[in-house]
Image 1 (cartoon, one colour):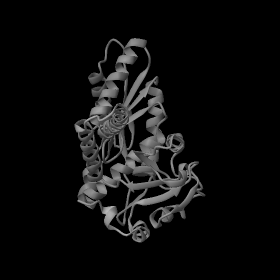
Image 2 (cartoon, rainbow, N blue to C red; image 1 turned 120 degrees about the vertical axis):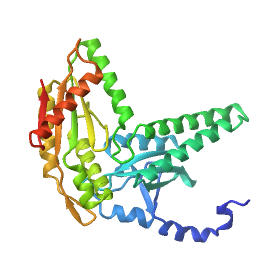
Image 3 (cartoon, rainbow, N blue to C red; image 1 turned 180 degrees about the horizontal axis):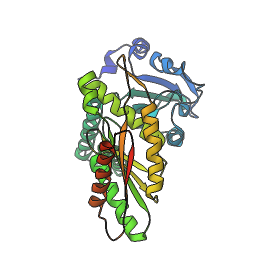
Image 4 (tube, rainbow, N blue to C red; image 1 turned 180 degrees about the vertical axis):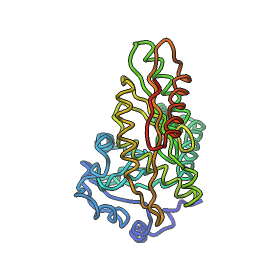
Length: 322
């Protein structure tokens, strides 16, 4: 069977690039943008000045892009694209291909929904199986394939740890992190606090506006968590509308200060979702680890009970289990 590129005349490629929804750009070896298609341009024209490919990535990811360009081999990864600081980041499936004259072709396709993530996981899993079945014809080829397979497996592992709706840690991973932090606190006699956060009257949101709006409300709360907890802290989606925050090296007072900020920030946020203006509040329960007394599950139960006490006390507030 002939490949698709063998059957399509080269003069058609320009029209194809301009009319697909994936963002495509051509960059020089140092990342300077040369040209791009309509989808990339639509995002670029609304943004702050973008001259280099790494400019569309958050600061924490830019060195990763620069290393791929300088390495000259391209690559495939998932990342956040931030054309504009005021907009929410776009989670994208990114490809970087080396082309003629030392240039690189960059292709980014937005991941918009949980089914997209499931397709990504499926594709990565198929790639792993394909690499495992391939015979090693020569030592150099075998080594290159091994490197590619390791990269794909790392990406598949990362995706498997993430809740596909909120892009926070999923339940399995946040509980695993909690267990690790409890072991660390016991070993070094260090501070550890946790917060259990639940969206108030979430069923009412689903019943009033529908589950699609409810899902977007969950994503909005997750964005607030990502933006308003400090760097060492870890957040994950523990249940349907319930989140768990781990605060290593923090006492209950620091956790209460963070909870106060989160309650205020979330309650003041008004989100426009499918022509509806939706706002929610949260109730937060806090517990500090007691060395020699608590296990990870008793600590979690204490925070959970404190969260329910916050709900009984009127919601949109936090309670510390003393």
